[in-house]
Every structure is written in C-alpha cells, then in structure tokens.
Length: 397
Image (cartoon, rainbow, N blue to C red; front, side):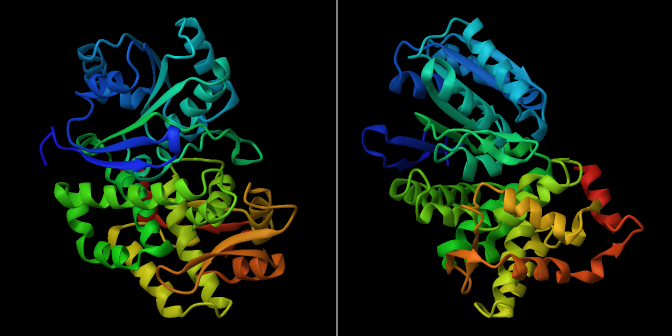
C-alpha cells in the first residue's frame, strides 16, 4: 500500500460523521488532511515523552506543510497519566496557547493520551475540535474510535469522562514499527475481540494470519481496517452505549478489575493484557454457566497463548487481591448499573451477548476457582503468584 492510498472507514453519525484513515505515511500528510476538514485551524498537540521522541518532529512537519501552527504539551508516559493532575495540565496548556473553540486538540499517542486529550478537548471552552492520531495498535483499533474519553479515579478505571467524538482519526500503520512487541501484543487483544464478539470468520482469519499481522504490510492494514469497520458499525448504531455498544466491553469487566487490582502498574499489566485475560475469563465463565462449550474457551486461550499474550490470572506477576477484593473492583466498574452485575458473555465464538443481573455469588465462586494451580496463598490471605517467564517478558518490553 502506498502512502497516497489509505483505506478509509467512515463513522456514520449524521452531521458529525468522520473518517478513519488507515495506511502508511499519514503523519507526514496530517496537515493536509486536517486543513481539508478544519480550514484555518491552529492546534495543540498532546503527547507523551516516549512518543514525542519518536514521532513529534514528523507530525509537526506534516502540520506545517498544511499551514497549521501548533503548540505542544508533553506528558509522562504510562497509565497513571490518566489523572486529574494531568487533565488540569492539558487544559491549562490549551488555554495558555490561546487556542479558540474552533481550533483543534490533537492526540498523538496511545490510548492514555487519546483518552486524556479527548476529555480535555471535550470540556475546555465547552468543547473543542479533536483529532486522534493513535500510535499504538490498541489505540488504532479501539480507543481512538467512538468518542469515549476520560481519566481514571483511585476507585476505578475510566470513571470520569465524556463522550466527545473526534473530527478525524489518522491511523498511520508505519508508526507501529517502533512499538515494543509487548505493546503490539496488547493491542492485538483488541483486534481479536472484534472476531469474538460477532465476526467469527475474522477470528478464524486471525488464527491463520496473525503472524502476517505482526510482520506488517497488507495483512496488518486489513486487520486494522476490519476492526475499525466493526467498531464504526456499533458506534453508528449506539453512540452513547445504551444498548449493543456494550458488546465492545467483552473482556473489559474482568480486565478492568485486574488493572485496578495491580494499581495500573504497567510493569505488571497493561490494558490490552487485561483485556486478553478478561476475554479468556469471560469465555471460561460462560462455559461454567453452561452457556457455551468449554472447547470455545480452550480455542480462545490457545490463540492468546500462540501470539504470546497472557490468558489467565496466573500470568500476572506479583500479588493479586483475593477473590472477594476482585469482586469489589468489579462492582465498582462503570458497567455496573444500580448494583446489578452486567457482563458480556458468549454462546460461542462470535456469539457475544449482554448478560444482566449476573449473580455476584456465581462471579465470586468462579474467581475463587479460576486456575487455582497458578496461585498460592500467602500469610496475608492475599493471592500470590510467581511467574518468572512472564516477569522477564514484562521487563524486556
């Protein structure tokens, strides 16, 4: 695929519809694409230290080529940046740059930067234009599309935020070549998720072609485009997650609980890894409830193992809270409504559905018995796990 021929996926939201462009070299033509949609605009680029070192100069040059002046707000890298402190820093930076409501906030980074910058753009001056330039696979296939923005609270992940749709998403597949393999794997979990929700043929395709997706080239572009099509279809039907958009949370209720349990320590668990474990748990829990065959759970686990993703709680290095505490994190999750537990469960590969009023006792029992061979109970009553290979992989990134 040449730089001049990105794949275009439209998110159909009427007069707020926007394009997702997917292909190589989009950073260099960013100014042209943004100016075409937002003529006469100025920009604030929100990024993190790691992404800035690799890609900021290319983006700034691309913006200048399109006649767009820009200010830069650079933040620390990591999940902990999604906080009130850094939200205030971004808002203050946008105001200090004297940007107006018609100007644009550009998120250059992964899901953390996209969520944070999107939230800031949604509240500063009561809402500014917003452009997503996702630099991780996870952000390109998931968090950059659909308008969910927000930050974390000490009480849970993504509990504070707004829906604020971007005006454009530029998914430059070339930037993925600089990703550490662990981060690419984490993003791949979200790719697989779309197949497991309602596209079984896509999941089967990934089982056969995941190596080419990792290697890059046309298979990578097509996989990202298919994931974006899947999400765009759901967002167009249910922008504010009042019905079937909740299906996109497959694996996330368990995953978010595990992220909170590890205090968002990226050395132990990053978001996509939490989703991978969560998807495996959701399929295993569905089998336990006699909703699906255990063979489906084993198939999901086998694929996650094949690509090098964690698939069970025992794959998380360090200590985890006990089952009761994990259930507490689940009940704090924003997907809980009036105390009722809602999970995305499945009747098979590509047959996910929304299960409401799941009994907490069933969840607790499942958490207590999930892969007990991976755990040993310490004197504190907390579940302690030692997994040297997983720890080594985390350190090597």
